[in-house]
Image (cartoon, rainbow over all chains, first blue to last red; front, top):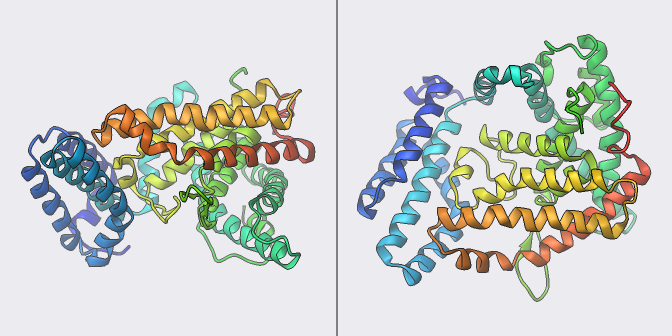
Length: 220
Length: 191
């Protein structure tokens, strides 16, 4: 994500605020022709943000079956104008939101979340802990995916096939056992349950190793 | 449940279950014979998070999944992600996941000492089907401008799959309670 468009450079908070406002405004559009124009306008934002045609297609394709279904349901139950309005509105909203996410780095969005949470601190929300949770989850994602793959290989080797139970149970037990060691390691490094707890900088997802949780523990 | 401060251990559990729910998206969907609707493993995540972590941590871990989706990670089944997901017609089911995890967790906490396969299944069903659809269907109706009845009809086909997932959750929850309980040990344990 090293784009140089205006959208890429705009601050994350501004983009989110603009998205929230535009999202609310779009719902108020009553005419399907205006809605389709808006959709085309937002779609034009993709090449302007130098995202390429593939990005636009990747956003719309998973939505297609539902949009088609919705179009015919609406058309038959209500009217075809209504069908066009609803489908164009959903597609527009999805593309607008995708434009923001695709042009903003995850870290910038996490930082924005942290800023937005700051007023909630008196209610017991600790922004430091929130971003620790974010960073840990990002770090665990590749680890757990790989662990799941390992369990699956082991089960297939033992002839247990693809039973979801044979897969999920050992995976969850491993995850729970690892959790305690990881928590101890974090506390040992960051002071005992320090309220000003900060996420560790080395939490970027790295290609996994054979013994995954050990590699996590080494890093925290 | 007095509002205890969230310990580092709790945060690790929350993050791990968020990642686990994301990993569930990787499992290929199973298509039930006769019904023909693909069942994705992922919507088992909220039930599992509640049944194993309890109400608060379970709900927070699913909230974290949604936050990760919002910042653009393609961790929903089918590789979906980004704020766009929250503009779609099924957003009610996504937000409903948080309530599912909370309710399933709360029921498991309340019935923890006498947890059986059947009671765990009932808890998972109440949170994972009744509560979820009570939120998801009205939102679908509004987002897609459908009547409540039409929206309900569209969702009926998913219920058999949800029953299977509630049953799997019960088997796992009971086994985890025996092997590595989390809910029952929450008091008196400060990280």
